[in-house]
Length: 271
Image (cartoon, rainbow, N blue to C red):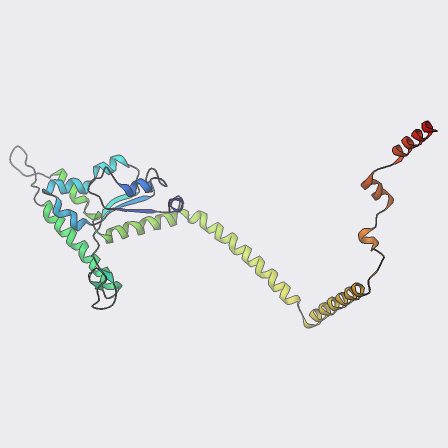
């Protein structure tokens, strides 16, 4: 899986369930393929179970801002996004799975339930953030609270619909950025396919019944001749396969003139 994530054209979706932004086991695995998370979108799941755990609106605001993630991974591609997925699976009408959870009748029902979870999460967060009262100036007049403004700015990160929109924009940007490289590759592949197709069509056009019959007859004649020679046998080796000229033989085994002279000298001494 890590080797697959190393592809530079892939966008990595890092889904994790954590309350402590300093530690993320899933991010540690992703960083083996994408150290600076420049191709990674962080998604924090089970938001509906985390919201009740915050005792104050300020704590919820700090969690949504996720400043620690920005400091740890300033070059991340996106996120963190927050999502809630309804429990249960898609199955037969009125059925239950092994754990007794409700099973949705079809995919559309599950998608609708995800949209409802997104609306509920956003409504609860907006209601909780209202508890942060705006600050007042010296004259007692209310003024904008920068912290509240910043927290509300992170609402677009809540929900699967927001995540999907972000990913669609990124994919579209990546496609448009790579069009300049993709089009020449497609044109070259198209030209190569056309050349192969033309060669095949030329070969098919050259075929005819007469040429096929002549080729089959020639093959049969050659086969019958070879079979006849094999049955009759022959003590004569084909010269074109096993024969050698004098120059070829000398080049293969070398010259024996020096050896003959040495033998003559030995014979004279012995006499």
